[in-house]
Length: 105
Image 1 (spheres, rainbow, N blue to C red):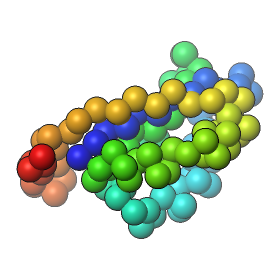
Image 2: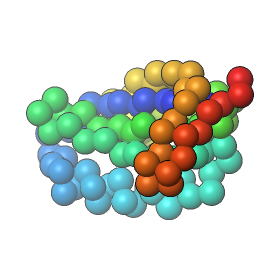
Image 3: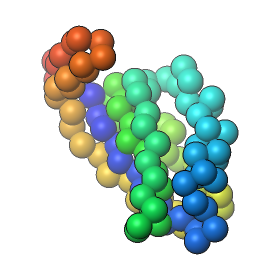
């Protein structure tokens, strides 16, 4: 599995409520997305950063979404292009599901 952390600077006029509204508006398009296990939206008021943490089945699945067109969409929507970092994720502890997921890779 792959964890992708995506961050972008937020305009000054986006407060926590507006960020939550924007995030809720985009959330449905991530439902049933190929290879996406889970997504968390992020908001940091102090540093004016928004973003997401994504758990993907593979890096190829993530890269199929983070296309130049997607990056341009983020830049247009929030005013700056995203910074995307990838991490190998070999083990996930999921306390709500009472499971430990281990990647065989």
